[in-house]
Length: 325
Image 1: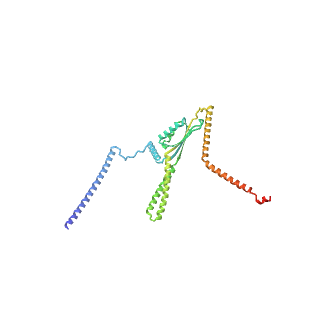
Image 2 (image 1 turned 90 degrees about the vertical axis):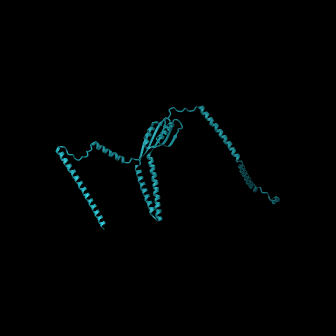
Image 3 (image 1 turned 30 degrees about the vertical axis):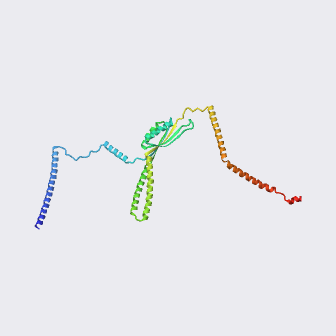
């Protein structure tokens, strides 16, 4: 018991010492703050007596007019940057008159390959004579950012007869499709959660049917988005190449050359006709047994008909008629 009392007295003494230390520290800090404030006031009074200006709180300088204009320009630029860029499907039409269709076609192919594009279609229409222009058409696809440079490079291959550019804004379609796709994906997640929680077979079947419809809509909208983005990323160029009509007409063949061509055609026709007759004879010879059988059958039927008609007409007279006579 005396030991326990001694321990309690020691703990009480320790608590008292700690409390005194805290009070002393608080008092000293308060005195320090008071002396600093009074020292600062006396220093200000001394400065005012000496005629020196007293230091006032610093104020932020007002921005000048050029700085205000710069700030407004920066805000405008940030707003423009935040605004989404319009999504455009660009199509171009270009008609060129060139000296040679073949050389121009090769040059266009090299240019498209250099611009990382593709040739989607090519059609070469050769005229029957030199009085009609030789034309060729090409359908080309190039990246959207290289459309202008490609058109300018193609224009240098000949004389530009027609050049047109059209654009279709599909920004709203893309935004709408993306929103619908997000909503469908959320619906898909909700249906999956319902399928996990529901225990009856009927609820699970209904949820699975709804999930199938949602996923079908997701695939359809996703395909539409990919197609629109591809059309936005790549622009189409319909290029038409026309060769200039030659000023010098091709001379017509002479009469002797025409007669020689006619004789050659005639002899060729006679030889073809002779070969056709010979082939016909061979066919008839091959089918002659059938023809003989058919002819024999027809002859036999004819004989039988004749005998049946002649028989009743030539009946023999009866003996009684001979005696009476």
